[in-house]
Amino acid sequence: MSKDNSNAGFTGMTKLLAWTSPSYPTGAFSYSHGLEWAVEAGDVRDVATLIDYIDAVLARGGGWIDAVLFARAYECAHDATAFDEIADLAAAFRGSAETALESHQQGAAFLAVTRKAWPHAQLDAFTERRGDAPVAHSIAMALACAAHDIPREPALSAWLHAVAANLVSAGVRLVPLGQTDGQIATARLASRIAAIAAEALDMPLDELGTAAPLLELCSIRHETQYTRLFRS
Image (cartoon, rainbow, N blue to C red; front, side, top):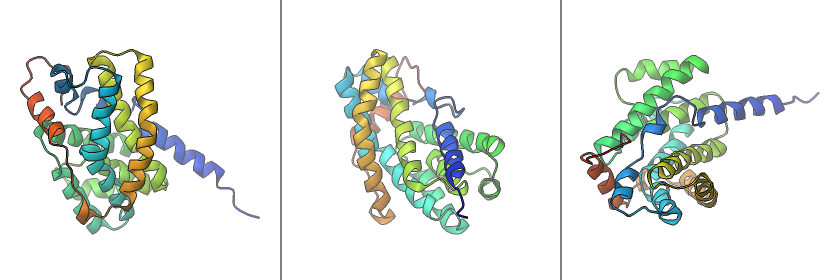
Protein backbone atom coordinates (compact mmCIF):
# COMPACT_ATOMS: atom_id res chain seq x y z
CA MET A 1 0.00 0.00 0.00
CA SER A 2 1.35 3.42 -0.92
CA LYS A 3 1.82 5.99 1.79
CA ASP A 4 -0.63 8.91 1.79
CA ASN A 5 1.36 12.15 2.21
CA SER A 6 -1.63 14.47 1.82
CA ASN A 7 -1.91 15.09 5.56
CA ALA A 8 1.81 15.88 5.83
CA GLY A 9 1.45 18.40 3.03
CA PHE A 10 -1.55 19.97 4.69
CA THR A 11 0.32 20.25 7.98
CA GLY A 12 3.25 21.96 6.26
CA MET A 13 0.95 24.43 4.55
CA THR A 14 -0.74 25.19 7.87
CA LYS A 15 2.62 26.05 9.41
CA LEU A 16 3.61 28.21 6.45
CA LEU A 17 0.34 30.13 6.57
CA ALA A 18 0.75 30.67 10.30
CA TRP A 19 4.34 31.87 10.07
CA THR A 20 3.61 34.40 7.32
CA SER A 21 0.33 35.63 8.80
CA PRO A 22 0.14 39.28 9.95
CA SER A 23 -0.98 37.88 13.32
CA TYR A 24 2.30 36.01 13.88
CA PRO A 25 3.91 37.99 16.72
CA THR A 26 7.12 39.23 15.13
CA GLY A 27 6.21 42.92 15.33
CA ALA A 28 6.27 43.32 11.54
CA PHE A 29 3.43 45.87 11.69
CA SER A 30 5.75 48.40 13.35
CA TYR A 31 8.26 48.60 10.46
CA SER A 32 7.99 50.30 7.05
CA HIS A 33 11.47 49.74 5.54
CA GLY A 34 11.90 53.46 4.89
CA LEU A 35 8.47 53.81 3.29
CA GLU A 36 7.36 56.35 5.89
CA TRP A 37 10.04 58.79 4.69
CA ALA A 38 9.18 58.15 1.04
CA VAL A 39 5.57 59.11 1.77
CA GLU A 40 6.57 62.30 3.60
CA ALA A 41 8.91 63.23 0.74
CA GLY A 42 6.07 62.77 -1.75
CA ASP A 43 7.77 59.95 -3.64
CA VAL A 44 5.03 57.49 -2.66
CA ARG A 45 1.60 59.08 -3.00
CA ASP A 46 -0.75 56.58 -4.69
CA VAL A 47 -1.16 52.92 -5.62
CA ALA A 48 1.25 53.08 -8.56
CA THR A 49 4.11 54.65 -6.62
CA LEU A 50 3.51 52.30 -3.67
CA ILE A 51 3.84 49.32 -6.02
CA ASP A 52 7.03 50.80 -7.49
CA TYR A 53 8.54 51.21 -4.02
CA ILE A 54 7.71 47.69 -2.88
CA ASP A 55 8.89 46.23 -6.18
CA ALA A 56 12.24 47.96 -5.66
CA VAL A 57 12.54 46.46 -2.17
CA LEU A 58 11.79 42.97 -3.47
CA ALA A 59 13.79 43.07 -6.69
CA ARG A 60 16.81 45.24 -5.79
CA GLY A 61 16.76 46.01 -2.08
CA GLY A 62 16.58 44.23 1.24
CA GLY A 63 13.82 41.91 0.09
CA TRP A 64 16.04 40.62 -2.72
CA ILE A 65 18.98 40.06 -0.39
CA ASP A 66 16.75 38.16 2.01
CA ALA A 67 15.24 36.07 -0.78
CA VAL A 68 18.62 34.83 -1.99
CA LEU A 69 19.91 34.24 1.53
CA PHE A 70 16.67 32.42 2.39
CA ALA A 71 17.17 30.06 -0.57
CA ARG A 72 20.83 29.38 0.16
CA ALA A 73 20.24 28.95 3.91
CA TYR A 74 17.41 26.50 3.30
CA GLU A 75 19.72 24.36 1.14
CA CYS A 76 22.31 23.94 3.89
CA ALA A 77 20.00 23.95 6.91
CA HIS A 78 21.26 20.50 7.91
CA ASP A 79 24.92 21.58 7.76
CA ALA A 80 25.48 23.66 10.89
CA THR A 81 28.80 25.18 9.77
CA ALA A 82 27.56 26.26 6.35
CA PHE A 83 24.26 27.49 7.72
CA ASP A 84 25.92 29.57 10.43
CA GLU A 85 28.14 31.27 7.83
CA ILE A 86 25.07 32.37 5.90
CA ALA A 87 23.43 33.48 9.13
CA ASP A 88 26.43 35.72 9.81
CA LEU A 89 26.25 37.19 6.31
CA ALA A 90 22.50 37.82 6.59
CA ALA A 91 22.88 39.56 9.94
CA ALA A 92 25.46 41.95 8.48
CA PHE A 93 23.90 42.53 5.04
CA ARG A 94 21.96 45.70 5.87
CA GLY A 95 22.33 49.24 4.60
CA SER A 96 21.13 51.16 7.66
CA ALA A 97 20.71 50.83 11.40
CA GLU A 98 16.93 50.78 11.11
CA THR A 99 16.74 48.00 8.55
CA ALA A 100 19.16 46.00 10.71
CA LEU A 101 16.83 46.54 13.69
CA GLU A 102 13.86 45.57 11.52
CA SER A 103 15.40 42.27 10.50
CA HIS A 104 17.07 41.32 13.78
CA GLN A 105 14.16 42.02 16.10
CA GLN A 106 11.74 40.16 13.87
CA GLY A 107 14.22 37.29 13.57
CA ALA A 108 14.59 37.00 17.33
CA ALA A 109 10.83 37.16 17.84
CA PHE A 110 10.15 34.61 15.10
CA LEU A 111 12.68 32.17 16.52
CA ALA A 112 11.42 32.53 20.10
CA VAL A 113 7.75 32.08 19.21
CA THR A 114 8.32 29.26 16.73
CA ARG A 115 10.44 27.27 19.19
CA LYS A 116 7.54 27.34 21.64
CA ALA A 117 4.59 26.86 19.29
CA TRP A 118 6.26 24.67 16.61
CA PRO A 119 9.28 23.15 18.42
CA HIS A 120 12.11 21.38 16.62
CA ALA A 121 15.57 20.25 17.70
CA GLN A 122 17.26 22.16 14.84
CA LEU A 123 15.78 25.44 16.02
CA ASP A 124 16.99 24.76 19.56
CA ALA A 125 20.47 23.80 18.39
CA PHE A 126 20.80 26.94 16.24
CA THR A 127 19.63 29.15 19.10
CA GLU A 128 22.22 27.62 21.40
CA ARG A 129 25.00 28.06 18.84
CA ARG A 130 23.97 31.61 18.03
CA GLY A 131 23.93 32.88 21.59
CA ASP A 132 23.49 36.66 21.65
CA ALA A 133 24.44 37.17 17.99
CA PRO A 134 21.68 38.73 15.84
CA VAL A 135 19.53 36.54 13.61
CA ALA A 136 17.98 37.85 10.39
CA HIS A 137 14.27 37.15 10.06
CA SER A 138 14.72 35.44 6.69
CA ILE A 139 17.30 33.04 8.13
CA ALA A 140 15.13 32.09 11.09
CA MET A 141 12.20 31.31 8.82
CA ALA A 142 14.33 29.43 6.28
CA LEU A 143 15.60 27.19 9.07
CA ALA A 144 12.10 26.59 10.41
CA CYS A 145 10.80 25.68 6.95
CA ALA A 146 13.67 23.29 6.27
CA ALA A 147 13.43 21.70 9.70
CA HIS A 148 9.70 21.11 9.30
CA ASP A 149 10.07 19.77 5.72
CA ILE A 150 8.18 22.60 4.03
CA PRO A 151 9.29 22.69 0.36
CA ARG A 152 11.71 25.47 -0.50
CA GLU A 153 9.84 27.03 -3.45
CA PRO A 154 6.49 27.71 -1.73
CA ALA A 155 8.34 28.70 1.44
CA LEU A 156 10.33 31.38 -0.39
CA SER A 157 7.27 32.65 -2.28
CA ALA A 158 5.35 32.89 1.00
CA TRP A 159 8.24 34.80 2.59
CA LEU A 160 8.29 37.36 -0.23
CA HIS A 161 4.51 37.70 -0.14
CA ALA A 162 4.66 38.40 3.60
CA VAL A 163 7.27 41.13 3.07
CA ALA A 164 5.17 42.71 0.32
CA ALA A 165 1.94 42.44 2.31
CA ASN A 166 3.47 44.16 5.32
CA LEU A 167 4.68 47.06 3.17
CA VAL A 168 1.31 47.31 1.43
CA SER A 169 -0.35 47.52 4.85
CA ALA A 170 2.08 50.25 5.89
CA GLY A 171 1.38 52.15 2.66
CA VAL A 172 -2.37 51.93 3.14
CA ARG A 173 -1.97 53.60 6.52
CA LEU A 174 0.63 56.17 5.52
CA VAL A 175 -0.47 57.57 2.14
CA PRO A 176 -3.34 56.88 3.06
CA LEU A 177 -5.08 54.49 0.67
CA GLY A 178 -8.30 52.51 0.81
CA GLN A 179 -8.36 48.80 1.56
CA THR A 180 -9.31 48.03 -2.03
CA ASP A 181 -6.27 49.96 -3.23
CA GLY A 182 -4.18 47.81 -0.91
CA GLN A 183 -5.52 44.64 -2.46
CA ILE A 184 -4.92 46.01 -5.95
CA ALA A 185 -1.29 46.60 -4.99
CA THR A 186 -1.00 43.08 -3.57
CA ALA A 187 -2.49 41.55 -6.71
CA ARG A 188 -0.19 43.49 -9.04
CA LEU A 189 2.85 42.47 -7.03
CA ALA A 190 1.94 38.78 -7.14
CA SER A 191 3.44 38.09 -10.56
CA ARG A 192 6.59 39.97 -9.63
CA ILE A 193 6.95 37.86 -6.48
CA ALA A 194 6.84 34.68 -8.56
CA ALA A 195 9.54 35.96 -10.91
CA ILE A 196 11.76 37.26 -8.09
CA ALA A 197 11.48 33.97 -6.19
CA ALA A 198 12.45 32.00 -9.30
CA GLU A 199 15.50 34.20 -9.87
CA ALA A 200 16.54 34.04 -6.22
CA LEU A 201 16.46 30.25 -6.24
CA ASP A 202 19.19 30.23 -8.91
CA MET A 203 21.33 33.11 -7.63
CA PRO A 204 24.71 32.05 -6.15
CA LEU A 205 25.96 33.90 -3.10
CA ASP A 206 29.09 35.18 -4.82
CA GLU A 207 26.92 37.12 -7.29
CA LEU A 208 24.60 38.61 -4.67
CA GLY A 209 24.31 42.40 -4.47
CA THR A 210 21.90 45.32 -4.51
CA ALA A 211 21.38 48.50 -6.51
CA ALA A 212 18.80 50.53 -4.60
CA PRO A 213 20.52 53.61 -3.16
CA LEU A 214 17.28 55.61 -2.91
CA LEU A 215 15.78 52.93 -0.67
CA GLU A 216 18.80 53.12 1.60
CA LEU A 217 18.53 56.92 1.71
CA CYS A 218 14.86 56.68 2.65
CA SER A 219 15.78 54.42 5.54
CA ILE A 220 18.64 56.64 6.69
CA ARG A 221 16.50 59.79 6.53
CA HIS A 222 13.75 58.06 8.44
CA GLU A 223 16.12 57.79 11.41
CA THR A 224 15.77 61.54 12.00
CA GLN A 225 12.25 62.03 10.66
CA TYR A 226 10.40 64.34 13.05
CA THR A 227 7.05 62.56 13.20
CA ARG A 228 7.09 58.78 12.87
CA LEU A 229 4.56 55.97 13.20
CA PHE A 230 7.01 53.20 12.30
CA ARG A 231 10.37 52.05 13.62
CA SER A 232 12.01 51.92 10.19
